[in-house]
Length: 62
Image 1 (tube, rainbow, N blue to C red):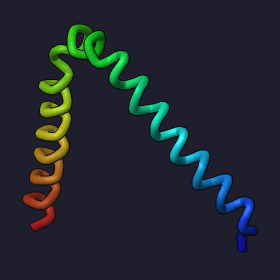
Image 2: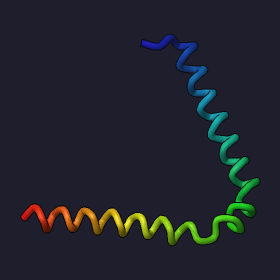
Image 3: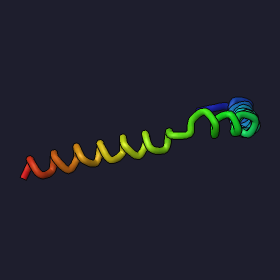
Image 4: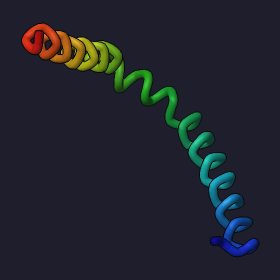
């Protein structure tokens, strides 16, 4: 399906991209911790809301 060169390029690109993402995340980690303090609670709220909707759906269905 893919030639050997295409597969090699995709592998090299993926590895380079992941390494770049890792270093950029480490560079911005301090800023993210300060800026996005309460984001955990928002995510937890969304998860509980979705679980609540699923619970209502299963109760009404029966």
